[in-house]
Image: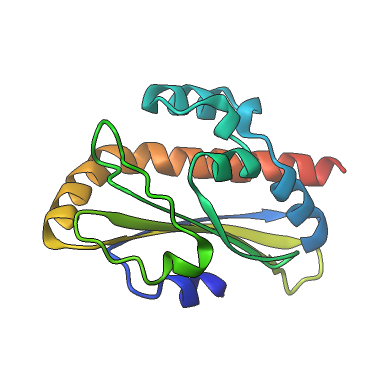
Length: 174
């Protein structure tokens, strides 16, 4: 997978998946245009973190500082973000896709997320996975992020599970 090439070394990893009775192309199209504002859970959790609702689409995420690292239609989308996520003001860094891998400033962490579309062997649909990887760029950021992750991980997971559930619902309704 492309995520393996873009962030092979990491401190934290979370992965979720769902089986969808639709083609990889259909699931990809739904995911790429997906608007997470339809989920009260996601809206509420993002509001708690102080994130604007406009950031609840892929295009909105890119306006908030996420960078599109790779997009292989119907196979995988990979996006990244650099910041100090454990602080009240996460100090999101403006990093271009071609500079992302080389970013190595102590005190920060790099987050890479993906959405992969894997055809199921039974030809009945696709398995959609989302994985989040975090690489902390020094020992102090690693300690701070681990404490932050203890608090935020269940909510981060809930967002990703809800994201997948909504994609399944929309893709199967097509």
